[in-house]
Image (cartoon, rainbow, N blue to C red; front, side, top):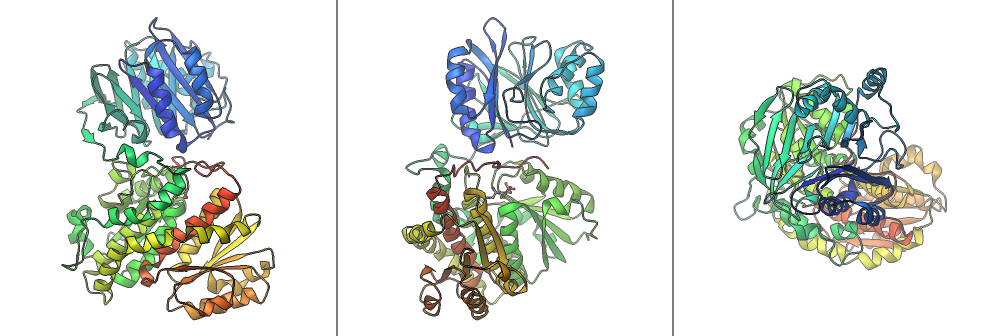
Length: 609
Ligand code: AGP
């Protein structure tokens, strides 16, 4: 997932763009660059492999005075992360400059066609075809805009692009097709970005571009055209609800730890105005428009990726138990290819923190023809997935910057609990008790966070291990999967999540003194069986870390590495277990002195399939 920033206005454009790129670096960070049109209407490109920090001094030294610039942080999809493949890319005449987020699926066909017309290509990227295609069409059109529209209509795949050219030295162009772009509307200035994080320092008034939108931006005007139909569109001004402070790091060493510690307020934010415990009701405004249809559903299919997929698995247990509705959770990347029968009474529920995950978007696009209701559980306001669904429930976790998702998982599971209770219509025996437990959860989450020093003490013993099992039963099984993902993605240690009952069907063969297992053994109907699984591991000298409910003395004889969690209901256990698992993974990665917010090879939002 790449980051795009553009600026047009009275300030030094490259200052604004570079600052914006720093705010987006969590999205992708193997190369970076800026392009500008200076006061002499000359174009300039400064780009290289590496982080924004390394680019800053170069831009300071080399950039001319400019009020129009674009920039890009890259997470490579085509071509190595180096200065040739870094964006911006330009046409052969070096008077058109483009930054791009997404994938041009027909780039090879375009490249071949342009090569026949004498164009040359120097990078391995798909993006480089865009400025040359614009050049090709503008040479055959009356105006630059006409040529740009023709080029955009020739592209296939997902793209968000920003374009500047010396031929139109006072105009910033931007276009989107299934990859996010948002325009911050300031006072005689506009800031364009692929994510509101780069805009909120300037303004909260924004326009979210939609598919087929082409924005033509001058210092005092913003016009939008549907480039597929060459029709003008009225820009829809909205208010960003992210708050600058939220995204600030504060006293934390990195965003991941900050976001783990936000768990109590995350639970509050996800339930605020939605859990009216004294009246015994759940109020989900985002579902009101579809409540009638929700009374006649035969099944729910949840689609998501990564951590959101594991939240979906918790949602499966919750909705089936509380609302007695069959649920199936599918990886979005697999859902696309399945040939499954899909009734109109089935709901498709997409879960996504960023709202921009290409696999999940593709799943929603596929379901468009099923005629079924499409709901979303999304964090990023106004994101593509939020706009693609018929209705949904925002998780209100605020900006999540660390690549490893933490508070978003907490918020997703909290919202899924609310949805399950809503669908139960209050008819479940645990309904009232759960409403009450939800109101106690923030302080129980705080109690887990108070265990951080103990979790850290236990964790660092295991920092050099090469392999890990995470096991659990029932609601703890999806938690085990998520715990394994957290450890994998920030410590680079191989970790597998398993249903505890599966160990004797094969995985037990791997257990020895160097293969530790973290067992989730909190109070539940399955606790006794989980303890048997733990004993099977212990008798084979497998090192054990056990997370149990406060007061459970039985487990004390099984290991010295015990983490006690506050007692809670089975249905709300995943929220508390997840916090402890996040801290577990965090402290191992911290002990290994890894780049916790930017794990190698990963990006915050995967907008390519
Ligand atoms: C989770 O820690 C990862 N960053 C990744 O698995 C992520 O959950 C997945 O890419 C889905 O992202 P989304 O929730 O934004 O759709």
